[in-house]
Image (cartoon, rainbow, N blue to C red; front, side):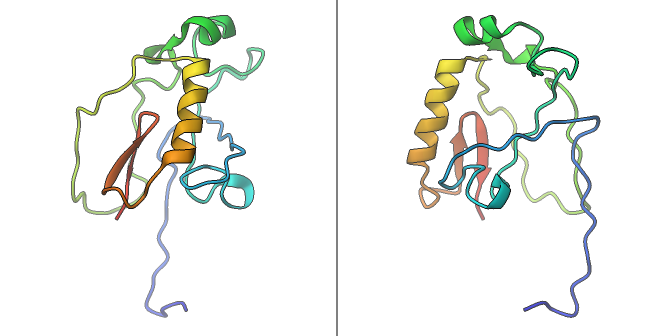
Length: 137
C-alpha cells in the first residue's frame, strides 16, 4: 500500500564518469543474481578501459591478474570519490576497515563461492563479503 503522504526522492548515481555494471549468475542473497536481471540486492560498478580488448578494469594484462594478481591501486577506480546519492543525515561512519592488497582470479573465485554459500544475514549487523561490508538494519 502506498502512503499518499510519501514524496518522491531523487537519487543520483554516486560515481562520476562512465561505469560498467556486470551481473552474476548467483542465486543466493546477497548475490547479484537473486532477482530479475540480477540487481535486487547488490550492484558492482566497474570502471573499464573500453578501448582495450576484454575491457579490463585495471592497468595491467590478463596474465598478471590470472597468475600473480593485480594490486588494487592499479584499478582505474582506485582513489576516486564516491558521492552521496541523495540528501540525508549520516548516522554513523567508520574508516580503517582492512582492504585486501590485490585481486587474483583464483582467490576471487574462491571468495565469491565461499561467501555465496556461507552468508548469514542473521549473524550480526555487519558482515564482510570479499572486502565489501554489508550493513543490515
